[in-house]
Image (cartoon, rainbow, N blue to C red):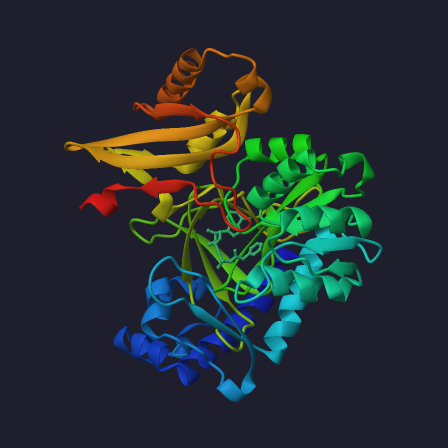
Length: 424
Ligand code: DLL
């Protein structure tokens, strides 16, 4: 769609959603009233900035159904985010929302290269998490043959992949790496698998991690992004040009803001991603602050699509570690580690306090061959320490450990352990 035409469509849908939340959600009505905003003031996309942000706290404070804009009798499905502490965040879908969601997953998988001839193994968790069921119903729309494997029992996953002839694997990138490892040790062999494409997402992963996945699984790894508060997976995904993730802008209006000031940033500038859902009925959200860090681009892609693209999300504003006043992102550490030969893509970052000083250390596994080959571990640790120091400008201790020491994950990887919060 031509971008002018798209803007008209977005504006029309935005006007509708503003009325919807004002009329149906007391939380938004109060917020708008307090700020003197009337739904009629919002004439289109250019007025978006006048609207207040929504945060995860608003969802928590209105747990479980407080922000729903449709009565429960209209809700067909709920999902919930896991959340590390306390109550989860509950999201709800009407029949129409589920239709749209399916369309968006179908769109995203098609643009990545999935067709009705594919056999897709869905190894995202089925259940309250949006990954499994989200992908499942969208892939059904394409007509692909789905293996609803969910997570767990990894050797059985490999057996299914071989016996049922899976051509596409949908899971988190860290679970795909784990599968690659189990495959290597199993009686199965990569040569007997038909797998060619990975629909990866649900967690940050770097370009270096993508290279590892290519090398270890011999597949094309594509990146797919989404979050439950907006719809789940299906918000954006890569096309075969791999130049950013195409956003489903006819359903979600993206913005990039300065996380400190809340001001809108220009295309090409990095900041926090914000989305407004413009077709959701069950749980529409206005200017939802994702805490994900990215950049937006609106030039047409070489694939011919005109939708805006976002850069790969490699971090969140809340996973930034502040060490002695220096900001460090786990993705910076991952990039350095994955660039070192002989290092396995399994690591953990440990933040602690020694006396009054913050202390950062990285535990990372060695590849089997190097470990067995009598390597000078101290020298290698020092080499990595120097590399990290030159990128991060702070000292990071490095501990190389034997293969398979670090816990594997079937869902989202937990990369950072912050012991400072435990010691207070
Ligand atoms: O993770 C939805 C999803 C499922 C997306 C399957 C893709 C595939 P939540 O559990 O609500 O939803 O977590 C959302 O995960 O705010 C990001 O921080 C992170 N995230 C999701 N996809 C990506 C990605 C699902 N491709 C949170 N790259 C988001 C980086 C991602 N981070």
